[in-house]
Length: 224
Image 1 (cartoon, helix red, strand yellow):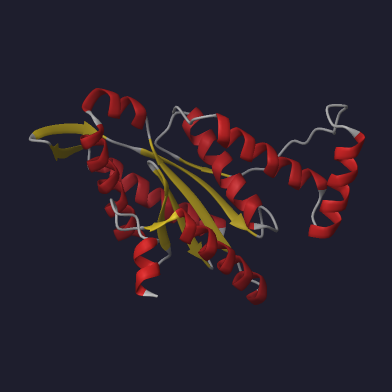
Image 2 (cartoon, rainbow, N blue to C red):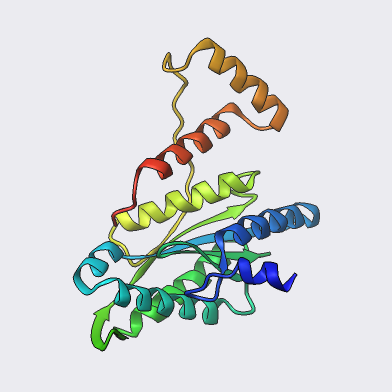
């Protein structure tokens, strides 16, 4: 078991990886469902990290990632778990925490990091002073969906809105505006979609949104 734990630990930050996050989050939703409680999920992503890397180099960029990882882990200790979701993005699981409480926690974590003003990073014999911030997107089970994929998607969309609305802030998931299916799908695709939705016990729109999100993640890179 110790060997498996090491394999699922991110070498740079010491945090658990995305693979472990997916397993833990699914378990927490199952637990919340059985206990009729809730679990919140936050995605935290460093602002304008690509620009920072270009201007100061990957070594400094790595130090910035380590810094935010330490800050999140220390601030969330006792309240939930932090995972390195990928690159400069982190997932925070807050079991038993409703959306309002989770928002207050993540806003406190964000503002505390922001109040530090300039952060000093040292790598390859170079010292750099930077104003580093991060944005957060938040969603809660079961308020925002009945499946872990829905909560992940809505937290990710909330993060995107935080970036688009100015960065360095916490955004909550919100009710989505839906559109009807069009002739972009073949009859065979729609029939298979209907069977899959019945088998999984979810709406067809849920499955379509999950598929579209997977497609966007595959071909698009968050540039904010």
